[in-house]
Image 1 (cartoon, rainbow, N blue to C red):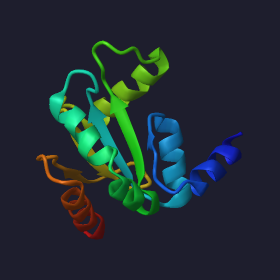
Image 2 (cartoon, rainbow, N blue to C red):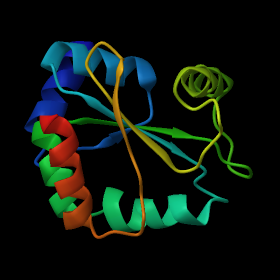
Image 3 (cartoon, one colour):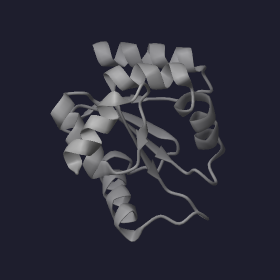
Length: 139
């Protein structure tokens, strides 16, 4: 089943934002691509909602990401329910990468899970965000 999932991901024309940390880290190790880890509050954090609409939903960003990144969103909603298992995984990610509880917090991790760099979302356009990502990836 895992192999079929990998094949399905490879055939897509745009990247998908994953919500399963185990799958994201596995795909990163297998492909060598870094992970863009986004800590979000999808139903209460206005900058997170704006980031989702302006960046994560943009086809040019998703096209760039398909070739260069594994996208992982760790969502901490207040009203929407997530599974207990997923909540435990997200809390473990937050303990390691987001101890200050910032939202949105965007980390670039290598395929071993080590922090490469942090990115800021300052209402920039998708093109500007991609340019910033390219700079961080080349460092």
